[in-house]
Length: 331
Image (tube, rainbow, N blue to C red):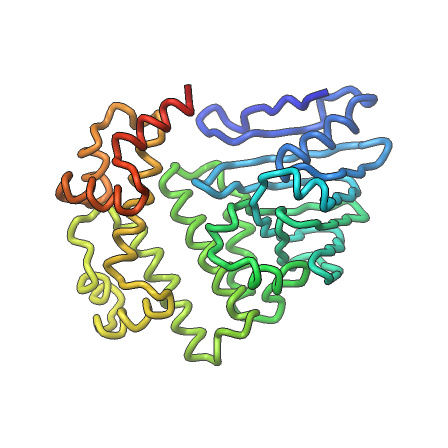
């Protein structure tokens, strides 16, 4: 039986799977399919009799926020399933209730409530939840997290930031984001999700040993705040290194030094984020009535010809070609 998802709210694009209205003989198949649809193809083991289960998803741009409240289960992604799928996703999961055991990349960890962990759907993984549980997850393309495959393999299947000040900041923030994801306007939700992903990336780099002491930690946190500020002000044509430095009470020289951590200039980062927003808008049906120049202006580009040049340089096609291909895919 293919599970029927319902709208979580008439005004939002989130979906809800629940066993409440499913006849008892069909619940097990329904629940297994709902979990697999959300987290990718897995060998899903659930009790013979599923009493209840609720799964809610909410899109936040390229990130999916997921809450699962369910009975004990086991999910195994075998090498065969991983090889036969194009699910190049990373799951950042917070265990809010229950217990969990995660196995990946030769490691095994037992998690307790309040702990974060990460696993990669492109490789074999085993997740066991032996009792009734509540998890809150962000499912995102690996490229969004910004870690190489080698780095990602070093942080999977282990508690992330359990004893870190940054981990203590991230855990309630991620929990709150997932709980309230469906209430945000689209653009706000995307910006908040990007900030949380930036914190996950910073926490991962801390785990990898790249944050050498308090000074480096402070620099990373400053960079996270500045990147969030840039995302909130992309639509302002006057967004410049000078205005950003002024807003954060730092020198322009120090601002450039912070962005050296990303191996990119401030101006190039701004342009890159604007291009990403324009690319997303050009593919969206909701803004199909806007001209390409209007989309560019919406995200801070003042010259349509300049926008077209940098868009082609970044993506290999013109804005019009990109919009046309997106419409054909939708059709």
